[in-house]
Image (cartoon, rainbow, N blue to C red):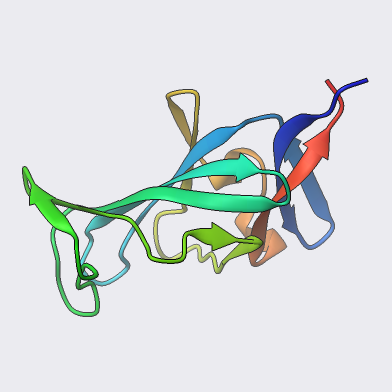
Length: 128
């Protein structure tokens, strides 16, 4: 039986497996209120950051070298785009992260409550 790519979300005792090959992680900077977005692909045991976007700039939000500004949005790719995991510190005092799957975006609270604590995203495998 073949295994499909999947994204695992883990926080405290909560474990969620989402059978996806690609996803977008979006959030709003807590001070500047500017939107960030990162596009990822699940590649074996890795998460590959294929592209990132920042809607403007501000304190501590300088786009990296090589970023291009198109329509008020900085677009860039990182020199090292490979991640084993992404750890998200979450707070009830700012809007929660959004996870976009197949063109539909939902706050992470759809799968994992904020009260569960820091949330880790990593590649995993799922049975079809």
